Length: 358
Image (cartoon, rainbow, N blue to C red; front, top):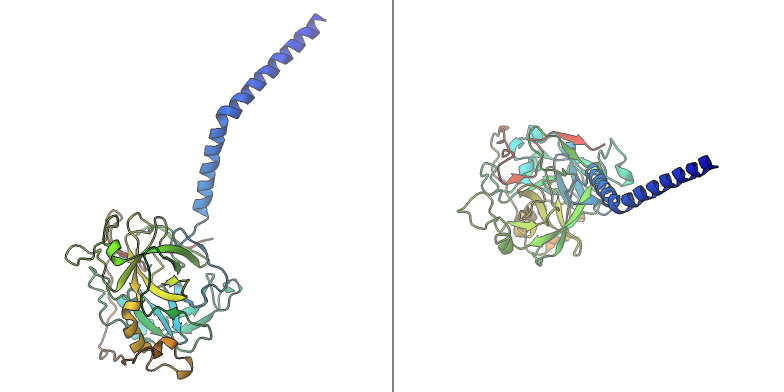
């Protein structure tokens, strides 16, 4: 009998110890569990890459006019059935007819790879080669003048007429400070550096960024200037700023659209920036409305009448006459800044090894 009582007492003591330990874990261990979960969520978020920094997957048929350059090399926008608008720096270092002969765009790209290789997530797309002799870089763009990145525009004429409806373009610059604009592309989620892998999204990304007027972009707290007498991070009237901390375009998004979804017009072309999503360094875009006359002078005069864009009819159009062709050679571009350098970078991908995100 005494042994039985002793056993009961021992069991009771064990139960008390177990209960005490449980209470300690319930009170003190909850925060640790929360911390572990938070760390796990962070890791999961890192692995679920969003690619345009801070963005997410574009929905089916939201941007059917988005143009994806062959091999993932820059983006663009179908602004008429026969023309794609993009960034001059995407091709300016290899701007010979020979080097452009095999270059083309997938219009309506949604998933990578698209077109003949993939199913494009079920969205209709069309592939066109460009006509090298009809490729027009803005006459005032100068790749060697790395201190400005000004007039960063190029117009590609397609070798056919797309059946996909083009995007309308901004002709009057009626944006207001803080207005949401949408950046679109397949670019990287990180600040890529030479020797480091970059990852291209397998699905078109988009992110809303706030419009910042030039006067504000050149003032505190932002770190750009509107004076050409200072350094290489200055904003011209042909540029515009848009961004929020943690939301931006990045390497591989060059040439892609900055879109005003409320007015359904293309307002900018992804050009350059300092890093990707950094505080006080919004993305910088080529301002479409600033060069509407040049765009119209190239696109409108020789356009097929049946598909002529409505913006061709706003004002009299001056025909653009390209400079007399000269013999050009492929040049070797200057390398991007070192990792520690705070220097403006064009958001292209020529220097970087892209790996498709699995």
